[in-house]
Amino acid sequence: MHYTIIIPLYNRPQEIKELLETLTLQTYKQFDVMVIEDGSKDDAADIVQSFQDKIDLTYYVKPNEGQGFTRNFGFERAKGDYFIIFDSDCLIPANYLETVNNSLNANWLDMYGGPDAAHSSFTPIQKAISYSMTSPFTTGGIRGNKKNMGGQFHPRSFNMGLSRKVWEKVGGFIITRLGEDIEYSIRVHTAGFKIGLIPDAIVYHKRRTNFKQFYKQLHFFGRARINIYKFFPQQLKAVHFFPAVFTLGLGFTLLANLLQWPIAKLCNILLAVYILLIFFHALTQNKSLKIAFLSIITSFIQLIAYGFGFMQDFWKRVIMKNA
Image 1 (cartoon, rainbow, N blue to C red):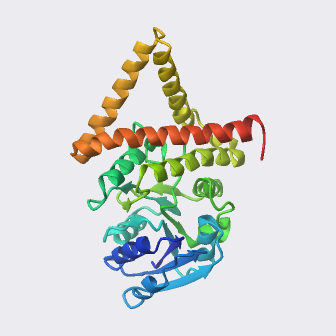
Image 2 (image 1 turned 90 degrees about the horizontal axis):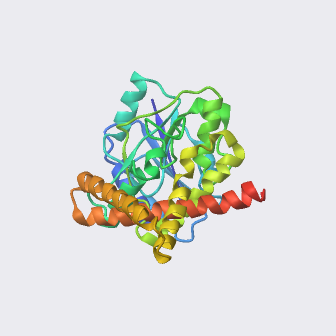
């Protein structure tokens, strides 16, 4: 089977260099790569050119439309039997395609998703961010893992694959951002295709490199959940309210301490237990005190940013019924 790897790119030339380097090391060779520059001002033309003799690689430049519609641009031009989507800030293990191909031969999936993890080269902050995005003590526990608490499994577009038949029947993305991957996978489910997780199809996802960027990204994710609700109201589960409830609870705890309410003591105990759970779990995962401490910060940023984004658009678009 031949795979076409589709990578939208926006002002991240250094990231695509690192990603393409990992693709040159793939043990399974039946693939081509499409890098699609989505209206970048800081383009990667020279970097992409340097890989032309190392892998089967095509490079496109188009006006900015966002990642969803840029992936559609790739689908329309892909020559593979199966399409794979990566974010430009991923590093791909050398056995990734071999793992996927073996898994699909053994247990066919029309669409799959894979997990993400922290690479040994990541900074402590990146490792802490990776922890908070995959932890069972944050929204990492509902992000589409095998035992998904949020309902059916939804592959995420940093590490997603789909057959040509899915594209031919369902089409591509109908929104370009704000939860476009979840919306798409729900339509694929509805069309009757088989979707699942390939647990060993891991990518190393860099995500954001500082706390401010991470906050902005997760605030966007919280808003995206409401955007998905507008398309599929039944997909909004009680568990998706957790970051908002946590954020409100944290605010209540601060207020209770400020006003010296008797309940403040109980709130402080619960908060301390939660912090210790994150710390010791992160410590066992990363074997680093520094990363464990940073993981407390990134976990709080994740929940608070997501919670504020969720509440913001829940108020605007659900309560006030603005578009």
